[in-house]
Length: 441
Image (cartoon, rainbow, N blue to C red; front, side, top):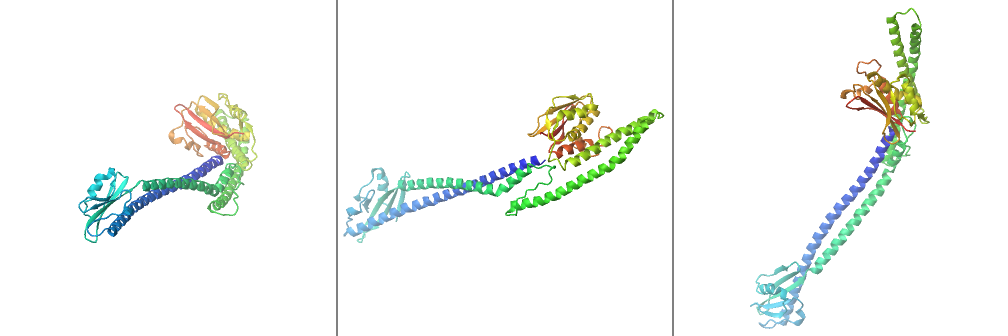
């Protein structure tokens, strides 16, 4: 029982750690993506504003230089104001100074006659052109047209994108590593609890987690579970004592009844009907005696199973089938980590039940989970209805009109589960198969 719990706990802890790491990495990745998009949007807007500001300043500088150099109604463009991509036009659209890039001749020609305060055009996403009219002191109008390449700004944006992606990847990696480290430290007590629980069973009621004084929620949980285990242990021991005391109390009168029935059968003056009745009483008392003996052995074994015995499965099976000569025994060579008496008590009721309802019964060993042996009891009987698959393991339940106390299968399952195994029914089209899982030595 504890073995399966511990494996689930360790698997759960590992899964939780992976979830925490994955969630941390995912949140960081989403934040990095959003931050990268925001940076790119801001950088794109900043680049656009920067280009417009550069064009505006260049136009203002050229217009100021022209106003200072011009006298009267003639537009004079000083050489110092003429840079690459700068062109100055008069009010008729004639080029007064500067050079027009051949690729932008049509755009410059169109903008040279603009009457709007400013006009900005973007050409093939590679250059931006700005036209800005100006007026001399004499009232003569002109137009300044300048261009600015966008490649340096776009390259800066690409560099910023690469840096953002690299920083985001590093942030995601750092977040995952940090989450893994923190979760490993935080869940280390859970791992210890799972490792400790994997060594437990109902046979070892004294073990506790013992995580020490509570330092966080998990160690506090360990202390709470230790207290709960104390209560559970006390309840189980009380049940064991009650079972043992009841079994002892029942054994004495039962032995007396059994002895009296045996003495009556020795009397030669009994008629046949009365002899049959006494024989039935004797068979019933023997069956009850076996059940009581099983309860006593279970009560004793669950309190001292830590120093578990090793028994041979074949020997136990042969003991079970001594009174059932027609039962076929297959390959049952295995060693069990339980006393042979309990192995017999776990298998015996299942075989007895199968013999009562079937003509052919076979005992073999099948596939089981690691650390366990699966004893298969197959029969060709009428099978078990879907509603009775679990009910047959309830104390006092009988089916098929067969005599019995209804304690055999429940006791067999309890004995198997006390050692971490189980007894279950696998429904088939023909007959039934009972699987008795017992710990392998």
